[in-house]
Image 1 (cartoon, rainbow, N blue to C red):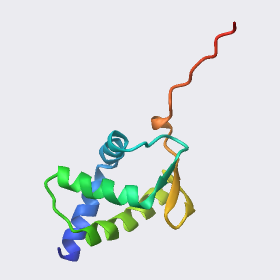
Image 2 (image 1 turned 180 degrees about the vertical axis):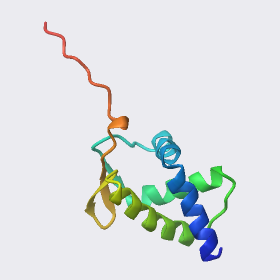
Image 3 (image 1 turned 45 degrees about the vertical axis):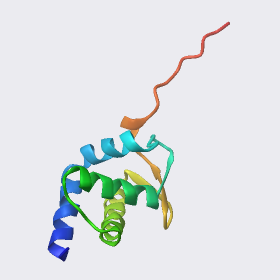
Length: 103
């Protein structure tokens, strides 16, 4: 895969971020204010591309994931915890509030 192909694949994800995040939510526990880890994001990226009929190597998907994590941090969708984990800041994926009934 050439660098231009890598950039094109990354652009596919960035330009369809809502679809990508929803895809992750369908495959992983991906809830507002929960932790999410690099390897999960890596596998999600690889699976998302495969779903769009784009084959990529493990290593290229890892490179893309590193770049993608920076985009998600910049957009404040991810809040960095350390070099391989984030807290998801995406209220759209919050669990529904449950009202407590008074007995």
